[in-house]
Image 1 (cartoon, rainbow, N blue to C red):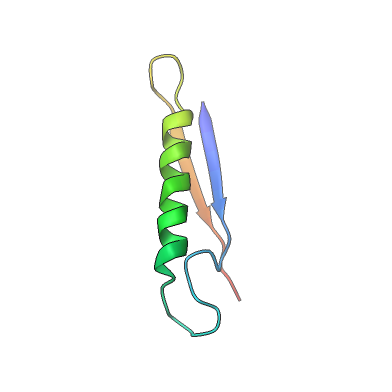
Image 2 (tube, rainbow, N blue to C red; image 1 turned 120 degrees about the vertical axis):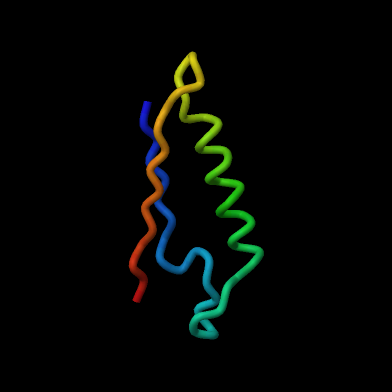
Length: 57
């Protein structure tokens, strides 16, 4: 099974301050990635995870 996880372009940055990391948002995104990874396998624990990140504006 393949799981596709799309993270919007502004998910891990602070839009009010260019090129600034939003650490809380990054932690949440990493939790989502970990959940998708765990949930994406088949009965043998095998699967693929594709992460797509938006280009932003």
